[in-house]
Amino acid sequence: MKRKPASQRATQATDAVCPRATECLATSKKLAEVKCEHSPVLIGSAQTKQGPEGWVPGGYIFYIGLTTVVEGGYTIQLASSVIGEGAFYEMSPQEREGARVAFRTALT
Image (tube, rainbow, N blue to C red; front, side, top):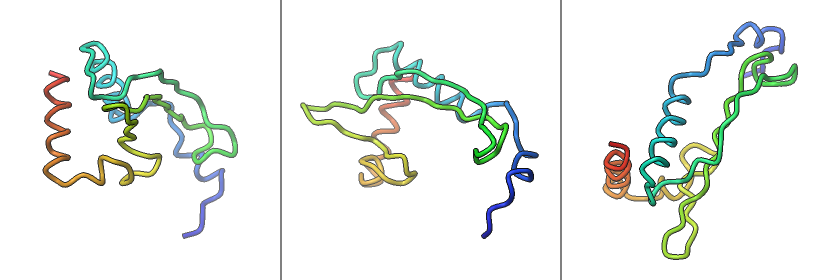
């Protein structure tokens, strides 16, 4: 598929952060508040406007900075910058469900 010109992509620009990103940030803050030792620590977040060479010129980019989890002296990267890669995705379905339950428990 050919990439559309920047002028066409710019018509899709918005400065509204999607709910999933704000929920992720809120969850990270909540886990930090309860001092969950099994979750990455929130370093910070930022929202910036894309320049003319961005994916959607004039649209937003929302960054969330998290540390990695350290277990028993080993650093565990739960995910990489590619969706579907990382330790979480290498777990069995039962182990992934256990991780989800642990996060829900810590969050609530």
